[in-house]
Length: 459
Ligand code: UGA
Image 1 (cartoon, rainbow, N blue to C red):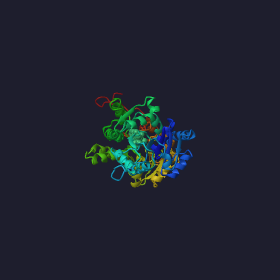
Image 2: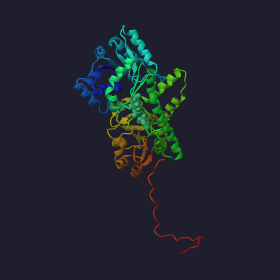
Image 3: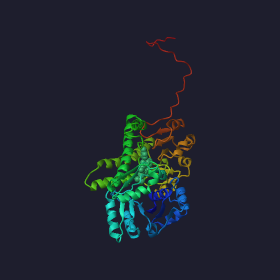
Image 4: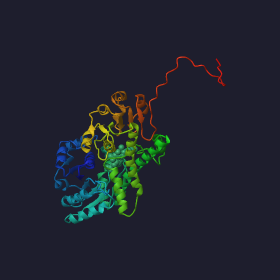
């Protein structure tokens, strides 16, 4: 099938690459000509495992192309995906300007009868607005709007798109359903379930899914605060909870909280939508508050371990909002760095992929070339993002180059025993700290005289 993709960001590119992998003919377009030039060379503007290879494969096979000309991209497309950003406004409401603009572009250049699919995460009711624009500006051509929310995660986006837990299609007509069912047939044939709903339900289901996952994380973080006070282990509590299939273990990892482009904005957007519709949903505000608290708790822990933050040097390992990505948008690691800098500490960060982006986002941050350079002279080492390679750090070498032997593990990534064996005091999240065993007191030279029950010598 011929598919047009409007917006070549993370979601757009993964959608385009995945649909090309499924055998469709895909044309992507974007307002950013520089980005398209990069794509034409087979490069992506961000790091996503496997994506460059998939894009190149699609382009080589002649199934995937990018063009700055929306008329060319949309002229023949039976299905057009809107994949533009929906960033938060200052009050948390989703900014739908780019969606509106895409609607106008499609109205002008799309072919009669095309199905226009919202892939971007949008508040329930957006499709109605979109349909209005398409009707108003379509010059008599008819379009149908559908919703097909994307559930891909950065870092495993292509796999998530090609092996989805569910394909959700919100439709307003049997014709839309037939067309989209045909589009996804290569996946449904392999057993990936297709869930068909009305459009508003599909739109809301995406926000609800992200908000619920964020709530699980915030619940785990609130538990972490409690476990630290009660002397319990939050990861073990999560294991016990997660063994109940009604709860599930996923997304119960306590740490510095969630970041990235999706959860913070989607929790806020759902809360705003609820409020606009006259239903307060205070739970969502609490989810966001607990997320902020997770970083504050780490700041307090570091301050407590170091007595004062002023003049201390702190090494932060991991700057991206999660591992396997170079994305630093709303990264808890950078919020932490910012808070520590504001408190008078010097902060040196390291990230396997996101160093450059982090420096751009937070110029006061020093970025080191490797973990050991970051740790040199530091009073505290913080694990802020759970990159797998940090598990293999040479702890003895780190200890040797640091000023104080303090590790704060904001992701419970390291092996506690190994950290302590290397001579560190270890502050995990949601568990009591561990200290290296104090050296045994020197043994007295001679056996003391053992006293009997009444203090009389029995010797
Ligand atoms: C999220 C959703 O997981 C996707 O299903 C959705 O499609 C996507 O948003 C989106 O709306 O586009 P993503 O933001 O890429 O995906 O990343 P996640 O893997 O969900 O992680 C989000 C944040 O939660 C990260 O900062 C991660 O470190 C944090 N997290 C995750 C925790 O703190 N604890 C956990 O147990 C799990």
